[in-house]
Every structure is written in C-alpha cells, then in structure tokens.
Image (cartoon, rainbow, N blue to C red):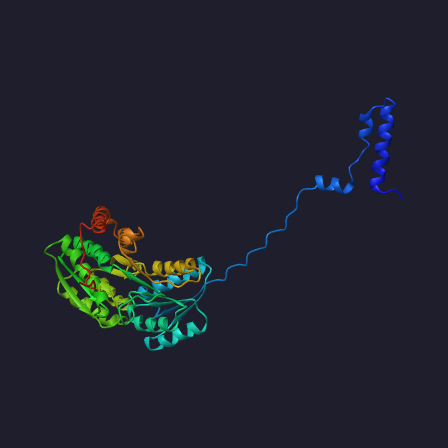
Length: 374
C-alpha cells in the first residue's frame, strides 16, 4: 500500500525526470496536492466555543406595610408607587394593609418571607423600622416621612430615610388661595396635630401672607386621619367665620372639609395626591407630595445597590418637583376647565406661581420648616 508520504515522493521524482527531458514544470506542479488534512486546516475558519449564558438576575423581593387604603391621598399614593414598580421594574412584591397594632407582626411576616427591601409608610413606623433594621442588618429597609437613628443619633446602615419639604409646596398653594380669596380669609384643617402637619400649616400661612399681607386665618385639627365628619365640622365652622378657601392636610378626614366647601359654595385645596377631581368646580388645586415617586425611586436604588445595604437621607421639595401645586407638578388644571370664566385670571396666576417657585428654589424666599433643628 502506498502512503501519502510515498505518493509525494513519487511525484517529485517524476517532476525531476520531466525537467531533465525539457518538459514543462508548470503543468506538473498543478498536479501536486497538499495533504488533505493540511488543506482543510487552511480553508476552514477558526472555531470558538459559544459563550456561556449568564444566569438571569433574580427579581428583588420587596414588601411594603401600609395603613388604611382608600384615602385618595397619602396611603393611596404610596400604593400607587409600589404598583408602578411592580409593573415596570420586575420586582417580586407584596403589600400588607394593616392597622397600627398589627404592623409589628406585618414586618416580621415580610422578614420571614425573605424580603430584601421592606418599606414603612409614615413617621409612625419609626420605632418598628428601627427595631426590625437593628435585628436584621442584612435586609434593606426604607421609611417615608421620618429619619430613623440609633440610640446615639446615628443613621442605621441599612435604612433609607425619605422626607419631604411640605412647607415649600404648602407655601405655593397658600399663595394661590390668598390670590383667589374674595374675603381675605383662608382656612386650614389638619388631621393629627403633629410636627409634620404643622409644616403644612406654616408653609400655607406664609404663602398666603406673601400674596396678601393682610390675609386672615382659621384653623382646626380633627385628631384623626379618617374622620370626614370632623373634617366637615371644622370646614363649616371656618366658612361661617368668613373663610372662603380651605386647605385640608388630613388623609381621608379631608373629604369632609371638601364636602363642606362644595355645600357652601366655597373652595378647597387637596393634599398629597391629585384630588382636583373630588368635588368638581370646588377644588382649586392640590398640594402634591410625591410619596409614589419616592417609593418607586427607593426600589430603583435598592436594585442598583445589587444586594448591598445602604443608608441615605433623601429630601424632596420644589426643586425636584416632588411637592407643590398640581398646576406645576403635573401640569393639570381641572379647576380652570370647570371654571372657564376664570381662565384668564388662572393663567396669569400660574405664571406668578412659577415665579414664586423659582424664588424658593433659588433661596430668595425662605419658607420656615418648623421641624428643622437649631
């Protein structure tokens, strides 16, 4: 049997003989073939192994503890932000709607369920968040409307603290109310008499006074976030005293104040969510507070942290467009649509409010924050 090496040797010998006899080497050379194995190596492209697919990241497990839903205000806003994160960020989320006495157990249930981010809504959750965060240092926590610290006043390493400059947004709507008031007297109705609601009231009164130095005020506190009857009682009382616009910062209690305004032909300003639709023609605007935006953002931040806990204080105000009149925050103006005879007046007022906002953001106007230390 003739091997490949022997075949090449025979061909070379024939070439030498033909050369010596005057034959053409060109035609003979074409008959010389490279070994098949070598030819395949030259003609075939280099092959590489396909890269291994990276494992798909697991969805962030998020839990949120809420108070009573259906207030069309603060708690509903928090739930709205959570729902948006569920739809857009691909999280694995659960919410618990609980009475205050049930919330400690709610946090423990979320911890036991393996949640990686647990969010508490309201300043009232501070001690419960603190206790849970200290006991579970590997879990990320967040709280809205409070800054949680340890017993020495230090931030906890696994708590994101979210607060708002409600006084700035309240200044904005107070300015609007005083400009539109025909009696020169405006009213404020608070839910619970707590520092954060005093921020609303102080900003409201300073904004109204900036618009009209001679403005007068009426105010009352209901002692509840869920007592519309008491809210209505306070509203009616203030309207009887000559007020013609009321700002309610009291969750579902505010519904009663809005009802009082509608029944007496006066006006109202909503709070936290866009409540301009609640009493058509009565609601001038709402003092937006982006609880929904803040819940969504802290979930984004936790995803970006990629499993690492973090500590932060995020404070949102006019500069971030998280607080203020619906007219500027989301660009809606249902009041103008329902009162076309006031359109020119309202359009001019929108421009004024934008100028006021710019002065607050720049620091030319400083609104009092009654919760600031020092």
